[in-house]
Image 1: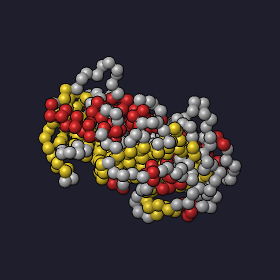
Image 2: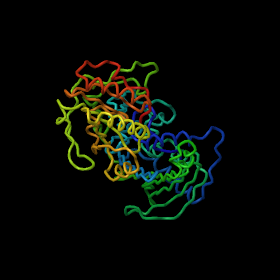
Image 3: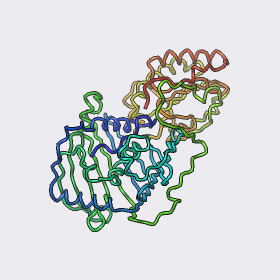
Image 4: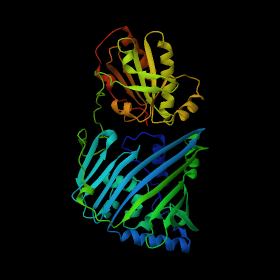
Length: 441
């Protein structure tokens, strides 16, 4: 069993946890010819074979997949939840529809086309559908990779050989007995491999449905600590639940219908093309989107109240974002330099709870005025696809500069831009809107 939750590296997903999981997937990929056969207890293997035969024999299936990632590192806790609704009809119809959480994508194969939509980048693919979904487990196309790695563990259930896929890179599997889970009696199996351990709950009886998987990623965290020291004491667990299972239900074409959103652009690939020219941020030279947010320490932030009075600096960030942690001290320092000269600065935290933010800030030497973008709506309005994203707004409410990612030269760039804006109006230059090739999450 490899790390199931591997966001594609070429899809811009916000989240330090997502990035570290992507790294773990690379670590866990076995080298061909080096993987030993797993030692599987007889009772455990009997259950796995029953599960394998059951999923191979399904003609249709609907279910919900709910994933919770729990992380704790350096005294900070982070929980990331994602959910999808799934419909399957063999041989070649599948719909995976995003419901909740940060890892947003839709995958719909209607038997004629495969459509993949990534809301965060407002782009979608439309590719010819294969005669069988099994084909997608033998290729490395973008739709195939998303199917195989986008929804944790689900691909293992609909793969041509569920048992073999489950046992990839596994050292041992033990049968640990029966347990009740949400009113159903389940077999519980425990697996161990080099980078993580897992527990699997499979319903007993005539329908051996997989009901839950828990992955303890402690081994991966310790391995990663060689390059990322803060992972040394990290606690990292992924819980995957399979709910609302319906076996062989009748399904209509409506279950596999995809309508591209009006604001989505069809592309041939999500991958950034080599030497693709960088384009200025579309915010440059336009009125900054108005908003109101609650402040962490009480009160409200209304962007409108600063119009005609101050230059405004906004930074979209999160506590788990490494590049954000590098940028924030720079921004705080720049703010201090200009605090009595007509500059105001707000750090717009993305989707985190107040407790986690206060815990983080309590350990810092710099001070921030934090606004809570709890649902990420303001981030969406400002086109945030990766953080940190820093936006400089003139006194007249026009966006004059956008910096994406961490750049060691950020302080120098900002000081010059702020000085110019405080000195008086001027036209924006195209170079200010280019997304820098810098470190971001």
